[in-house]
Image (cartoon, rainbow, N blue to C red; front, side, top):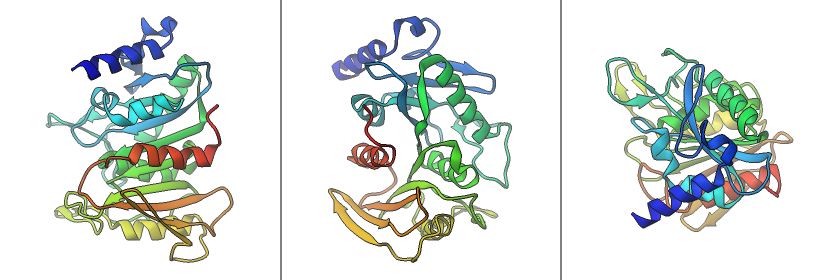
Amino acid sequence: MRLAFVFAASLALATPASTQSACGGDMPCATPSGSYRIVLPEGDGPFPVVVFLHGYGGSAQGTMSGGAARAALARGHAFIAPEGLMRPGRNRTSWNFHPEFPGPRNEADFLQEVMQDASARFGIDPARSLLTGFSIGGSLTSYVACARPGDFAAYAPVSGSFWRPHPEGCAGPVRLLHTHGWRDQVVPLEGREIRAGFAQGDVFEAMRIWRAANACARHYPDKFETDGAFWRRIWLDCAPGSALELALFEGGHGVPRGWSGMALDWFEAQIGPTQ
């Protein structure tokens, strides 16, 4: 309880006093088609920003209390948690992530709405932005990266990828780090059928699609690393300005311990120093 109190207090202090009464910290920020929560690090902006999409049934508030928010703040990044929509006839939030099952909101447009609003209110730097997400949030991250690679500087889906049918191709090169559990049975590496005509995709097929988008010279990685709990496969001989990596970990469906530090190291290598 004390840790939660200290973190909540630090979030309030990290948000400029002039914006606390409107939104930020514990107060969600409203946009025309949704809402988001944001916390800012100490110092002067514009700040690089991590945008984290929660999983099925999650919430922006819950995301703000997680380790990813603390790690981002500690390293000088703003942290944004957009809010998913409640699905019609259900009592849990989700994202309209599947291109063949459009919902009431275009999520890519919503995320740009969030970025524009946060830029105007808080002075974040969209040119140094990481879109990431867990599970279905990771799926939405992948689809935005594929269809609109220039919307964010880099992408880092966790335990979520494309669904079937896989995209025939993507719009252009991306910087992308995909992280997935070796033992994941909720979103297996090979995917699974949820119901007739609605099936998760294959992460290895997704990596093939990313290699094609990035014009990588070979289908196999150019570099292999073991970094703590992660087995990393890295493609280097690809289009200028792109980046592609698959990080596997031993566990199941989740955001693994150590992921925030690894992902932020990778992101900062793409955008340069935060200070």
